[in-house]
Image 1 (cartoon, helix red, strand yellow):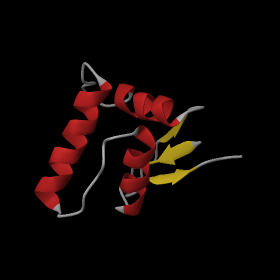
Image 2 (image 1 turned 135 degrees about the vertical axis):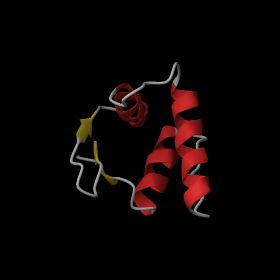
Image 3 (image 1 turned 60 degrees about the vertical axis):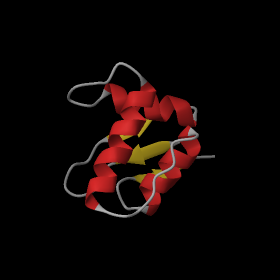
Length: 79
């Protein structure tokens, strides 16, 4: 599976699991958080300030699907 950040910044993240993909995205940030939970919470809180769209953080799969639905990433699962 892979996620790509659109809007001029092209960065490709790849991992074997949804959790691994979120971890890879967290590790590639300018200032990585201490935990994946903090990373998820930060993304959700910043997004809430800009829009009313909800991003779930109960699972990595939901988190990635919601980021994709909001247009923040382009997400696909390779079979």
